[in-house]
Image (cartoon, rainbow, N blue to C red; front, top):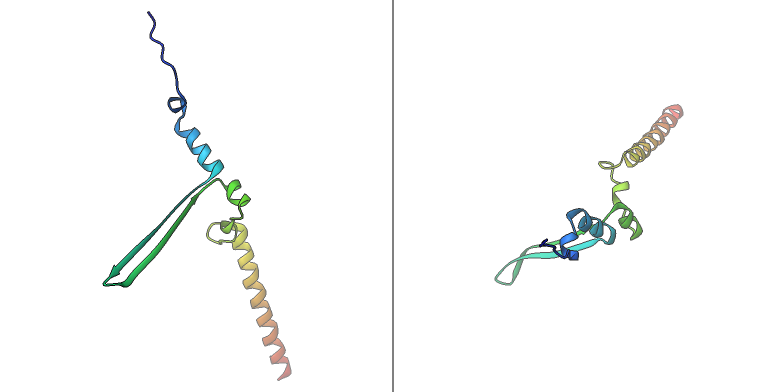
Length: 101
C-alpha cells in the first residue's frame, strides 16, 4: 500500500514564496524604546522599518535612495553639478570684483 500525503498550503509554501509576498505587499515593523529614571525621560528611540520591493516603495511614494549620493550615482552627479554651479557663480562674482578694482 502506497503512503500518500496530502500537501497543504503551509507545506508547499517555501521561503521564496513568502519573500515574494512580503516584497509585493510590504510589511511595516514599528517600535519605541524609552528609558526613564524617576519620571525623567533619558532616551527615546522610535524605530520604523518598512520592507518592500523597490516598485512597491515607489508606488507608496518612498524613493529617498534616489536622492542619496551614497546610494545613487545619479544623485551624486546631481550633487556635484549643484556644487559646481555654486562655485562657478562665486568665481564669476570674484572676477567681477577684481575687474572693478
